[in-house]
Image (cartoon, rainbow, N blue to C red; front, side, top):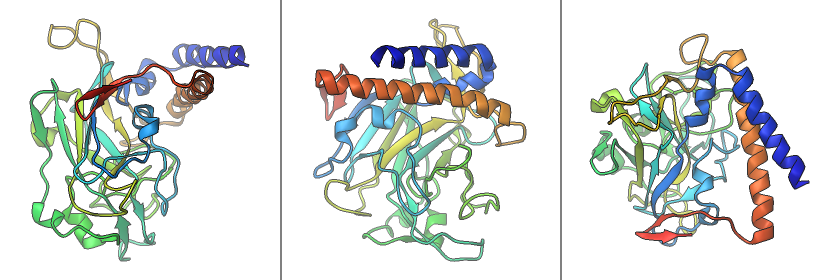
Amino acid sequence: METIRAWTVSAMAILAVALCPAAARAVLGCTPDRVVDFSPVDPASYGHNKMPDVVLGFPGESSPTTGSVEVASLGTGGSITLEFTRSMIVDGPGPDFIVFENAFFCTVPESAEDDYGVFAEPMIVEVSQDGEVWHQFPFDEDALDEVGGEGCTPRDLLKRLVGLAGITPTFTGDLIVANDPMVWDPEGVGGVSGWGGDAFDLADLGLDWVRFVRLTDSGKIAGFTGSTQGADLDAVVAVNAEELFPAGRDSGGGGSSGGCMMSDAPGRPGLAVMACLLLPLLAGAALKSKRQASQGKSGSREKSFIVNGEIEQ
């Protein structure tokens, strides 16, 4: 069985390279490669046994009124730092990356006029080119002060929380595209485009590229308490990315650039490209299954990342 799984992964990877254009294959570098630091705050513990894999892929399956369970809880004031090692997020057309927390609708609106609420757990978003100097996306601190409790955040307040992550519902959709929280998308569920999530544009910070993303729970007691306390990170996906060559950008090297989500129309991936993207995703699913089977036999697999300043194996 293990041999069959291995051949399945290899065959899918070969097909992805052979059949898909380079621009479409850019999706392989559109999620972070490494957890640099994970500093949760007690009593949060949900998803920690699945770290780091649980936050390094694409968003987990969920519906508009139920959050993804493939997440890691940060706890009140907890943080996580992610690094792109094979690529970097670049400033391109529109938003450049999307943060997926497991926010969900309390009631799904049917029109732009309907009132609604979202089970939101805000996160502060920072980016860096070198992991040392950080740039924070601006947000309305007065609006954040109004967030709290286990109830739903109302529509009017959500509009004022733009600049934070964890405020837009995340759910399994047809495409991963940047959602504009100020615009009702008639093709989306509840007016939300694609899989939802909160989109960020490097141009807002005057940056051309970054390789690190740091997400910090807002410190507000919002949502559930206990093991799932604080914001729950699902995924970070680059919309605009550039592949890194071994020489690196700083040494004069570079890479091929292009949108991670190619499209026939602005913000909408083409069907041919989407078909190509399915191959690496299926290969990843097969590989994950293989890893889980291997983990069950050996007890654990090699992995390391920083948890509260200490290396976890």
